[in-house]
Amino acid sequence: MAEEKEMAFLDHLEELRWHVVRSVAVIFSMMILAFVFTKEIFEYIVFAPGRVDFVTFRWLCQLGASTGIDELCVTEIPMKIQSRFLMGQFTMQLTASFVIGLVVAFPYVTWELWRFIKPGLHLSEKRGSRGAVISISALFLTGISFGYFILSPMTIAFLANYSISDMISNEFDITSYVSTISILVLSSGILFQLPVIIFFLTKVGIVTPKLLRGYRKHAVVAILIIGAVITPSSDPLSLSLISIPLYILYEISIFISAVELKRKEKRDLEELRADQQSSS
Image (cartoon, rainbow, N blue to C red; front, top):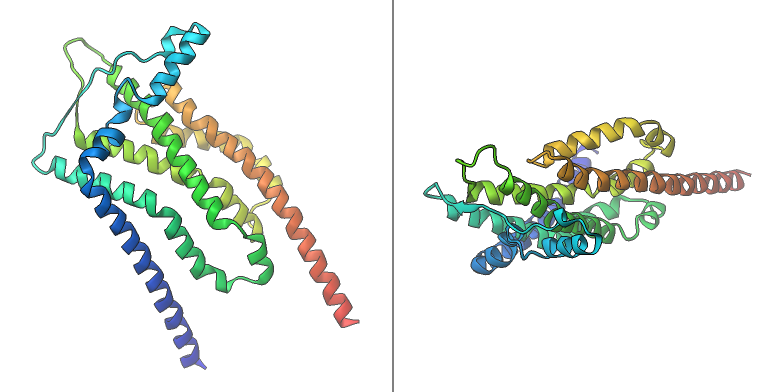
């Protein structure tokens, strides 16, 4: 009996290993592809949020012109990017390639993870989790887009224009620039998974809508702390840009939790009636 359990465990471990191998292979393939097109990626993707012609800045200028708030328009980003380390450019090329490879391959990695988990679920759990891969991938890509198009350019504009003395010029190292964008983008992608996490926690009975509503004030404080940690500038605008969407996600999570709880109670009631009918 013990040998059968050990074999079953080893079989699951072997299956997990192949899911991981395929996921890593896809990430590595996307990373190599990004590495090949490094110049285009840095020119049109990595360095784009640091230029005044970036789509976000153009939209803000249009908004400022239509509302009469000229301060919304970013007309200058006074910074220069340098490489002060011997391996700086090469290391950042690898970093940028890995991040882009991970982002592109994320839906596939999620699908592989779901393929491993799905056989162990009950039929009702499988039905209740339909569209999980699409939901997780969509929320991740939405968070990535938010981090890239909103959070990154606003943070760069603030830091580039921030000065405590005219004697100091902003010359950022490429490692600092790429690392900052990577952290902002990936952190946003992960944080946008909150509704999915709440959904599964509600499904297993750990979280309830009542609990989430009761800890709403605590959640606001936690969101502000997370926003302050994620945004290197910690200025009010950047803090608001990350905190407000996170709070909206929290409220959406409460709604999702309430819907899932009703479904769970309905399923439990149906199972109880079925058991009573079978016993009678």
